[in-house]
Image (cartoon, rainbow, N blue to C red; front, side, top):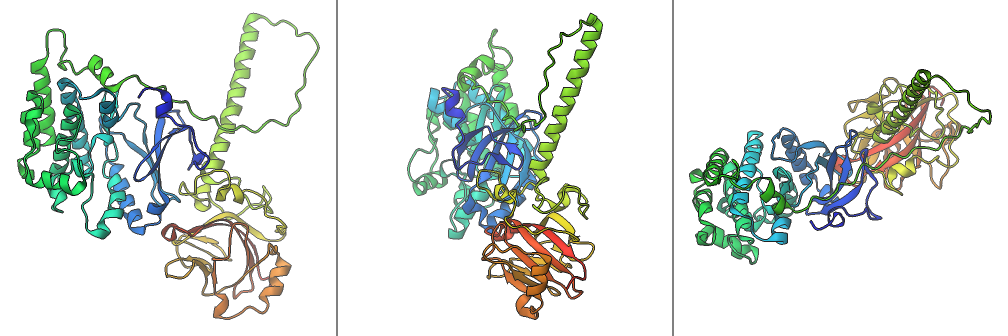
Length: 541
């Protein structure tokens, strides 16, 4: 990387400012699965946030694969992997966070300086093989190991996207029966739709190492079918490789997966070779150590710091005393300063925690007519507010609109208030206790399972939607619901509903409720949800 600017790009107008509580500091790039951003943990550690492309998120099959791969990737721990630390596979859109690796990809390093020295290639192979040991121990086959998925940190290589990027490839390839992966770095069994095993990753590791040593793909350039034909039917020309690398790479490229070296054998072979080649001044790593590696990775870019949390300006008046201050003894002044600093720090920490809770879990997004002191049946923030799958906060986003007061919002006097509440395809609401239910036994359900529009559905209650911005109140709902009965009113399409839309609801016991949509997400039907405010008047019909 020649400059920080090339690595860390400023956020664009269509980029979110926050993803599930992670404030974004810069854009790192984009790939087949989505955009990648720089953010930080609460402790200030840099992380890479990958946000899935909308067209992939719309694919239920991708969602299932992505969920499966992320759960497996959570188990991977290793010195040469970029650890997965957070993810929401059911989000809108889905996203994941890995530890940020400050260094170029192998592709970028080779483009910048050309082929790597032999010692650096050996160190690269040993580190990637050790990473594969961790990945395979978690029951994962990477299936798309290639130079762009190997990052070169100052203290060695890091393997990324283990088992995850393939979920995106499957979405676009399986429908046509094509192979999955990057053609130039596939194994023969991938190209012929054979069995995929850990030995498949070993073949890709050999091709990746050959690319590092040659500066180009081992099987040459060309369109995918031509390259795949060479991989399956032709012997690679290893004479172009430096002689010390040939025996190991030849074994890793064996056509029969059972004849290939294991990752543990690769690590041992590389270490022995490095030790044997070490000169008197080269050290135990045979010249593939800090000096050579720094030249390979290039100058390290300065990572931008965390984005500061917005702090609301204080409304308290600032009072200045014009009286001269009396001098205190040094010890007393020092004690006073320490005490003042502690009080200030405590206030800042409390403010920060309050913001984090509100931003991450939806606290403070009370319905406009809900008093702050209103007790409700809400047990915790997570029980009703959207989890980290809520859409990223950005100007004009659903959460931004939902936090604004709804025009002409009716007072909730005499009502039991539940707000905000999260309704999806797994839970339900009831006008009686318990109002929020973890199963589908309540009065009100969100139904997106058939081919019709997502709808509110009930076996016991009737619905009416308010149109043209008309506000629902107890009196309005009592009037309109008096003539609503029968199955026609038990299912109500959400096609014409948006944020701020209100519904009147009445059950068989004469309880009346107003539902107010704060956030609606029904585009991704598999992950559809409503964030609602609900006021209930018991036996009010």
